[in-house]
Image (cartoon, rainbow, N blue to C red; front, side):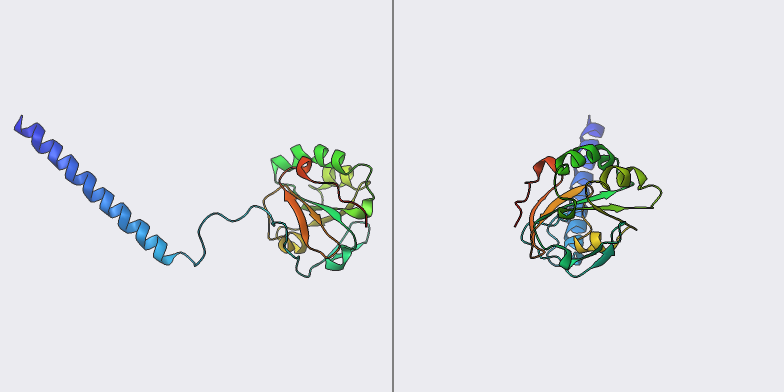
Length: 174
């Protein structure tokens, strides 16, 4: 019986020591965290965000810059390495079908050869940009989670953002 009591006391003291050690590590990590790092990053650019200057070229030769947004435009950011992007591709294509292709921008991050299924599905429906990882357009949108979808107003300000094409409002023409 005395061995049992001694063992329980030892386990209790060891648990208290472990708890104090964990609290000390958490406090140290908080001291070294950058200011304002309160949680995980936002997975997409929130509405009200003005896009910074950027330059890209569509596969059809269209210059895509901040000035490209002369009227409300749907933007889809997809990646060739993202399984969800492949799953959402038909839904995105259905969402933009029937819109003026100049009012839709599809950005595919990845190698040109890997992007071919995206290009084939979206080229008739949108201006398509294929760019390398962390390319100019995805950087302008804050390197979002993939897939992500936006409506960008005529002033190059994001007016709607979502992770699913079905959540996008269809922009009214100006």
